[in-house]
Structure formats: structure tokens, C-alpha cells
Image 1: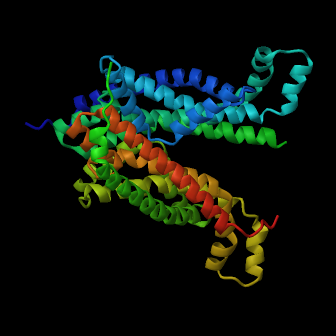
Image 2: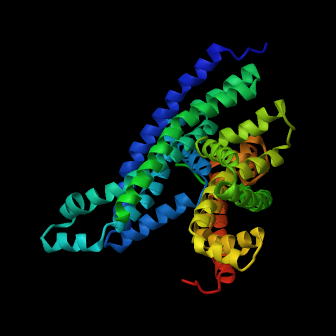
Image 3: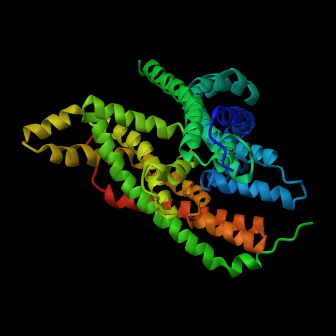
Length: 218
Length: 222
């Protein structure tokens, strides 16, 4: 018996968007913490930290997100944890976001003129205070636009969690499509919802970028 | 304690290599066709009439703000209801081209806009045709400017091809899936597949570096 794609089916898909949003938010929060650590290690004076951060970024930027999800998913299994798509997707996406945000934020920290760091040192500020009160506040202003841009990429990336069985927007679309067999309406709806989530963020990122480049051009 | 067992993976390593070869071919084909699409769209976006510009803008925004997975589902499952039914591999190629085209257009447009207007006017003054101006005066230096961005977008495209395994195209990730269901050595299979992807991305980076050294030997005019 084939179900007809009606209002109820439409609502089921719309409601599933909450899991996409939740997964994106948690992965972004985790990725922010990890990304800050990676960025700080990447610009650190300690060689071992720099090497680790560089390696971390290269591995995560040089392998597919899908494989990262699979490895965390099956890796949890062999290390004795129960298979749980929620936790696997969260960890994999947070690690993925850490690498990308780490690389973005490293660029932002390095974009702060070197004299600032030297001035902080000359004032007698130690590492923590010079980072916390001098470098990072300036780096954050540069970082906002590319970070929002990456958030769009992360939201789109959560769709891959459907492949390891996490029921978010895309997976819910597949399920409904299997029941109604109207792929055009189903995947059209799914695409429109992703578009409505991502497009405003893209616009904000672009506007901030132009405003920022105009402000720094002077 | 879990014991790793790579024997079944190594025994069927040739299957993975066959999959990797399709991944390479798929990525290169999508890159080349996608580059042509990007150049045409970038031309339309910088010097076409308003309606063409609006259509290209819409295309870019739609593709850049929806996941690749949904795009490929749309092309593979939904397109047959109003268009041709494609085989998994052709649908994968089409999806990759459409996806790369949107990002490539933005990159190349940025390159075109970096060309000083006086250069084009100099071309007119020398009596070059429209196409000659576009080819020699605009595209050549524009491509050089955006070459790094294009290559990293290509690496991203290559990694993205792993997603086409979901519509049963037979690329590297799909070869991994087959091997996984035959051997149940999931982790060993996927770590091997991941390493092959990593090797591919390093290999392509090296290749692009070599191409850059060869193709852009002439000095910058500025």
C-alpha cells in the first residue's frame, strides 16, 4: 500500500529538521572548543603542539567526512561502546568542525598584526592574558564571517549522518519517500528546508564579509 | 580487547583499487566538465544580460545552500519523474558537475573581476575579438589568480565523491561497503579506505603543485 504524500507527511519531514538543527548546534559547540584548542596549538611556540595541530587538520581536511563518520561509528563498536548513531555523529562532526574551525581561526589569529603580541609582551602580559585580552578579541572580529560560512557547511554535512542511521532531515525524507514513492515532492521539500536553514546564514556571512572588507580597506 | 584483522582487507585490496580508480576517473571528469560549466557561467554572470545573471545566481544559491547528498538523491530518484533515468554512475557524474559548477563559478568570477578594466580596453584597442579578449586577456591571468582556490575545491570534490556510494555507484567508498558486508571487518575496511582517500588527496595536491610550476612559469607582469 502506497501512502500519498500529503500534509501529514510534509509535517513529519519539517519536524525532523529539529534533529538537523540539534546535531548542527551540538557539533558546532564541540567544534568551537576543539577548534580553539587546535588554532592555539597551531600558532603555539611549542613545536610538538604545532605538529600535532597541523597533522590533525591535514587528516581531517584530506579525508571524506563520510569516512570520518564510519570510522567513529565502527570504532566505538570495537572499543566496547554500544553503537549509537547520535553519539557517533556528534563526535565525528565535532572533530571535523574542530579541524576546519581550527584552520580558519589560525588564519584569523595570524591576521592580527604581530606588533600587538609584542606590545602585550612589552607590557608584561603573560600568554594567557595577552591571548585573552589582546589577540583573541581582535581575531574574533575577523573570524565571524568565515565562521558563519563554515556553519552552513556543517549543517549540510549533518545530512551525511543519515547514512549511519541517524534520523534527521535527510533520513526522514528517505523514509517518507519509501512509503509514498513521490521522490520529487519529498526531496524537493527536504532541499527547500535545508535552503531555508542555510541561505539566511550565507547572506549574513556575505554581508559581514563586505562590511568588514570595506572597514579594513580604509 | 579487540583484535585487528587486516587479512581479508589485504586479500581483496584489488577491489578497493578498482573502486579508487573509478573515484579518480569520476573526480577528473567532474572537474573538467565542471570547469567548463564554471567558465561559461562565470562569463554569463560577469557580462551576460540581467536574466542570465539572475538564473545563474539562483543556480549558485540553490546548490551552495543544500547538501550534496540531497542533490544526488534529487538527481537519481526525482529526476526520472520528469526527465531521463540515469545509471548510478552517470547520475553521480551529473551531480558532481552540477555541484562543482556552482562553487567553480564563484571562484572564477572572483578571478575575472580581479582583471583590471584597462587590460580589456587595451585588447579592444589592439583589435582583438571578443573571444580572444576573453581567452587571452581575461581567462589566462584570472585562472592563475584563482588556481589555489580551484585546486582546494577540486580536492573537496574528490572527497565528496564518497557520497555517491549511497546511490550504488561503484566508487572507492562503495567498494569499501561491499568489502565490509562480505568480511564484517568494518573498522579495518574503512580505515584502509580512508587511508586511500588520504593518499589520493596528497597525490592530487602534489600533482596540482607540479602543474602550477609548469603552467605558470611566465613571470607576473605586475
